[in-house]
Image 1: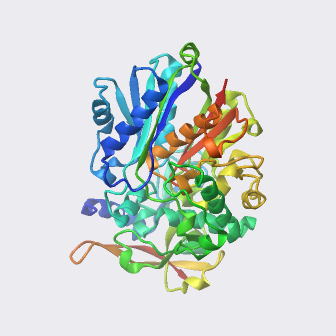
Image 2: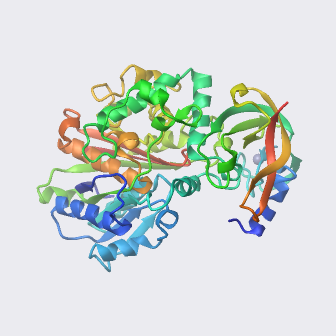
Image 3: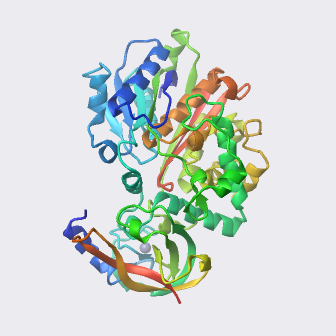
Length: 130
Length: 384
Ligand SMILES: [Zn+2]
């Protein structure tokens, strides 16, 4: 079980899609980093992720880890957003048979998982076909 | 740097070893290597293990094993880099002997995975992925490799049947390895009809959950020659890292860390990839072997699937890959895998590999990696 502090720390990224844009080369880090992986600079400005993009790759998970067992099968994918950022998330509201490389998706705020009957509920972003 | 030789190897039967504990498996295996080396001296130990904590509730295993092996108070160090732990333990042992810091070093690798249930094992393995940005969303290792497979199939035209052919080849090889967990053959049809784990990967595309260990004894090559042992040198060692989050890679189905580690190891050995007679590589999933043979430079980028189909990597092919049966058939006790690859190559170079012997093999290469390639290590071995 994750401590409340651990999930709370991730709120800026999971709820508000906050990334960091390198002040020198413009590379967008998601999640934010202290050092730009492209140019080594350490100064960043705020950036909010683009909320649409396309699927680069995907799969349907049929053997799930806790606490996702109840959700299986479920689709996940890596999307490239319109600002060039790539992220991994579930793809929902979609027939798994209709998944395709290149399909357009947008980011929505959803429940991701929950820990048992009285456990913490985790929220975050998921991908939905446009 | 001194030349380093492997003078002892040990491996026990792998599988679901319910009757044996973590420490028993280690000691039994290490003893085989000690007996094979024929010298009763160990100056230092390294143990590759991914997660004895999550799999067996036991950390601090370097000291535990030194004690149960009857070698207390020798220095003993555990090395962790997910599924690459064993290969990195070997590299640490190599560096320690090469540097002159120690003469005789025991390198072991181990994982005891069946003391927990399937979901817990999936979780433990999943900790090798980015927990905040992959694990949080319910990603598993089969899922990450499935996404690499979809990318490879989409961009390079790799087929579902070609993936299956990797499993067929490795089970064919593994059927000749008495220590393998699953020493039997499978057909393309069996793979294609096996249960889906993460589309398009099916259970017969995946390496299994395994208990097991492997061990080697290293010493300076000069010492090995004086002992009149068959001398197999570690001629080169290379290691590299990559992002552990798959989404951060520019190319989602290219194993850059393996490519760089191989380049470094071959440069140190002053050899080319084509000089190698056999290859033991990290086929944790069928797609992995296809990407690895591309990254090693055995074939061009995107041609891995076709190479398998053409028999290039079969036991009698130009580049025999995973004569041991690979992770697929031999089993994949994660921390043991990198060391077991070295055991196989040494047996092959000594000409002791029995039914699966690659004829006349003088040089071999091992490639071991962690996660989706966030870490990789390659070693080059040469017989004298
Ligand atoms: Zn930058």
